[in-house]
Amino acid sequence: MAKMQKKERMSPQELSSFCTQVALMMESGMTLYDGMEALVQTNHTSAYAEVYAAASKKLLETGTLYEALKDDPHWPPYLVEMTGIGERAGKLEEVMKNLSLYYEREGRIRRAINSAVAYPLVLGVMLLLVVLIQVLPVFRRVLNSMGVAMSASGAAMMTVGDVIGWVVLALGLIILVLAVVIMVLMHTGKREKVQQFLQSRFPAVKKLSMKLSASRVASVLSMMLSSGFPLDEALDMVPALLPDKTAAHEIDKIRQQMSEGVAFGDALGQSALFDEIYGAMVRMGIATGHEDQVMKKIATVYEEQVEEGISNLVSIIEPTMVAVLSIVLGAILLSVMLPMAGIVSSIL
Image (cartoon, rainbow, N blue to C red):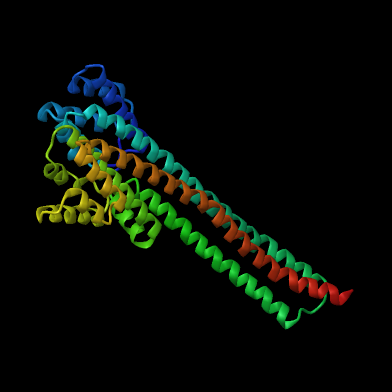
């Protein structure tokens, strides 16, 4: 079987494929164990063949897919916890279909972010190297060949241009290394810590994370309520699915308010996790007996907002970086051209 790093996370594409295959097996009426055996045979040449085989063996021992996946670090916590909730609610097939779409979307977004960040960074570093190593020395040789002494201000401008170029080059290389490190860590067991770091440094990332948490909360509550689970029990399952502690704390506050007699809709509307308008929607849903449908609608709205927010961030990364690099390169070249123009005009 193929060898792999012990704690390497499976890629979004692999996770999406796994969830799709499990959903198809269940839809066809195949038992979960037979389906996993078929999955092992189908993926025997995959880099994750050992992971599938271990899950199949554990499934035979425990009888549940949740138990088969939970102790293996290759499976992300969100997939594992959603699998457990799907099994408890009797909606594992539906959960696997939704997870397949979720990881397919995550893979698409990850590729877009990598492209938006890596391309301008690499291009900028190459351009700076060309300017500093090839272009500036040529200008100096041309100036020296003219046999005209450069003024003190002209020499100072060229020195400033040199310094700016090397400083920007160093910063670009540092940013490039950091970007590569973050991308690598996002594929390991340190993914959650990296996400927490980004959320603490960038408000836009934190806002998107809260919306993602709200979507997960609403989705789980919709599933559990439609399956007849009490609201308190459904809320108990939510914190394990949330990507950050702030969102989990908001769920604790909702539960605390409910224990003090506050209605669920009011507690939800007062939470920083949900917009106030959704509290009113939940109150209406409870009054009409359709709270599960309301929660499903809220989950869909937040999912769309998250995807739109990420797309907007990605769309401005590349042009912003290109614009900044263009300004820097222009400043460096201008610091060289101005002294040369002054010398040429003095000769003529």
